[in-house]
Length: 328
Image (cartoon, rainbow, N blue to C red):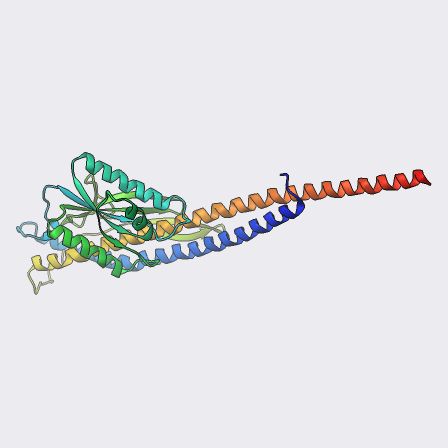
């Protein structure tokens, strides 16, 4: 590195300051991962009981011919895509991966001759689709850090009105599924029509996290953050013979379906937030490691330059002393 000592010193100080910032952002992201974990844990008992009861009620009504708007399966002509992105950057390729997945799905729908509209969730996705004049965006929703039931209800109201009014025949979620602190997978999941068995299916009809529920848990091992995942089999047992319905079971099932819709949307939002903060923590960890390595290389260059300068000054002093001795 052909730099003066002053320039090297300034670069070292600059790298140290950057390292402090990235380390702080990594710790903040780690705390936010824990908050995202707590959000999933807190919402899990309600989802479990809702699915269990949904299975049981549906089992009792399998012989009846009931009409529930959210379960109506009709020929698909138009699809609504709910694309969930992040609100901020500095999280590696998280937002780009979701957008690429959405673009891939839109291209597939176009190839099959199907029309589509987009409901964008997250500032990054909103900014992207705002520049895409060829994509019809029916609604843009911005989150405020962690999503709550309020944001899930806004999305649910939008997709409910689109589906029930038959403006669209299918609604799909495009979001990032949390796998680990260093991995998250963009997925496409069918949201509507809802399966009466409580199943969430992907575009190929494959069941996704309906009966087999996964829960991630952030812990520490040997001083390092790790993620453990617990698989819990939901029991869809029958109803107690002592239970009596005051209302018609079909009405109860009709009221439960919107709750199930909201719970699925909220879970997708929570998974997306967990993936975003985990990606940010991973990116900040890499940035911190790079800053440490760069600081090490700059320090070596600084010490070499300083040593060379001291050696040069000593040689000049010795040469000057020898010249004075010769004059004497």
